[in-house]
Amino acid sequence: QLEETIYLGKLSILGQMAASIAHEIRNPLTTVRGMIQFLSKDTDDQQLKQYGPLLIEELDRSNKIISDYLALVKPNEINLKEINLKQVVDDTMALLAPLGVYSNVVIQSNLKHYHSVKADEQHLKQCLINLIKNAIESVQDEDGGTVFIKEKITTPGHIDLIIEDDGKGMTNEELEKIGLPFYTTKTKGTGLGTMITYKLVKNMKGSVFYNSIPNKGTTVTLRIPLA
Ligand code: ADP
Ligand code: MG
Image (tube, rainbow, N blue to C red):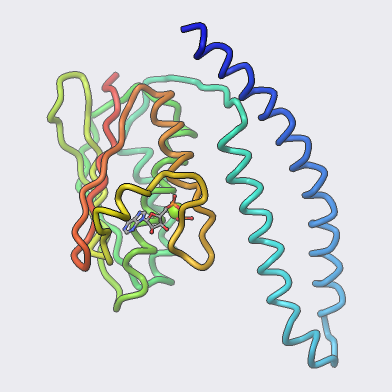
């Protein structure tokens, strides 16, 4: 108990430091991004035309790494409430629909309206975004595919939200590494998404586990307390 308290204390100092450093780094990044956009606008310079978008992409990537890192170390206020699970899933699906279309992935769900969970709405949404995005990204390299979201009650007092994809799957070695800081197999990944999910889910007294078969797909189970 004591050890946990000390650890959390240290984490929050780290979180405060990270927050202020992130802020200091983000300001110049935003300025530089605006400058590049400004200079690229209506330009005749071929090199600027060619490399401008790449510069912006790299700046956005830096920003994403900062946001992800921040989400991880910042002590977040948790606001547990009774919320409708289907509503949160529907909202998240609507948010990710454009990415699905762009990636040639169909996202479907079969949730019923009557299950309420005890969770932090924003945090639950963040977890779902992380998990569904990974599912989409595992499919998109292939010729498109499907992400299916369903619910199931297997444990008293809890509900399982199951996110199933028919993407590239993971070997046992890869499964062991998922959730380690900065572990990613993607050229543009940050390798922080799963750690953030683990942290947020743990705070909501839930759990996450993976089943995966290489070249067949992955099933992620997000187990959260019913209200
Ligand atoms: P990132 O998405 O930035 O790579 P994550 O922590 O979200 O970081 O995921 C870490 C790694 O776990 C991914 O790079 C990928 O290799 C693997 N992974 C996660 N979800 C899936 C999935 N649904 N199917 C296949 N691989 C996955
Ligand atoms: Mg991810």
